[in-house]
Image (cartoon, rainbow, N blue to C red; front, side, top):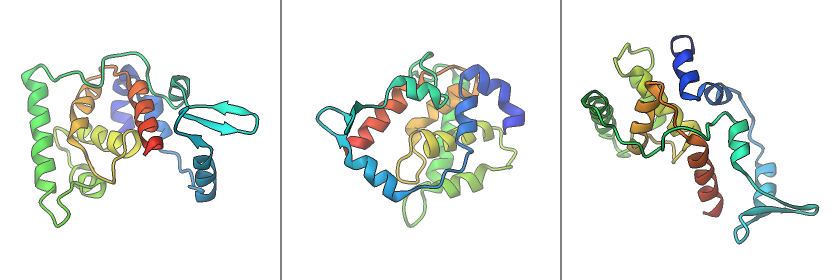
Length: 173
């Protein structure tokens, strides 16, 4: 996908973030649990012996997410954009017809990967956003479809604030 869509991803401000998601980082449960023990829900910060620290928008920029751009809530205004969303919705509905009633990452990927589908790029971005940016229990969430559709057209979306909010939400739970 990168060879086909690099220029669009750069225009949309997600190229670095997509590349960052390709790195294999081994999860270290002891380290994650140790860091979680430092989290203070009252101050929304990590409390260390040397002081407090927190995750900021600047950290999101380091990870390759843009602070500038349209809102993640930007509506799909043209018939072409709405049609693309409907195609993604239909596929999601078909994939949810299983014992678990979810469209999980592997089903989504198998459906679209190297399919030559006219919405393969949007589907890839839906997968990337669902898996690496706004992960929710190994499933594809249709609220991400408009974001993916805008990004596929090269529209810059301010993902950094939304990603930071998602991280904070997960830390509080």
